[in-house]
Image 1: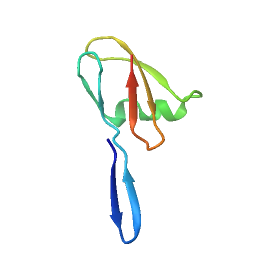
Image 2: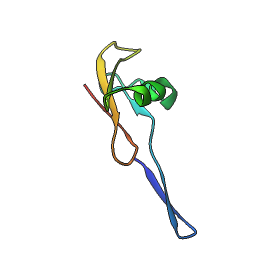
Image 3: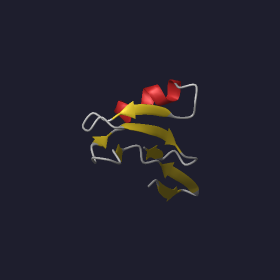
Length: 70
């Protein structure tokens, strides 16, 4: 969940870029997927979990938060 901070009359939004595998709960950070996601021609990428090997899809929503599904 992203955080919004009010600072000097401006709103600063900090997106949540970490996520857990929906199947086994393995923790992922932005370094694990970010570069590949931004270079992708589609708006999403697929990645195999390092722990359980399940294929998951990764994208971001309009606030910049990471969205993951199987």
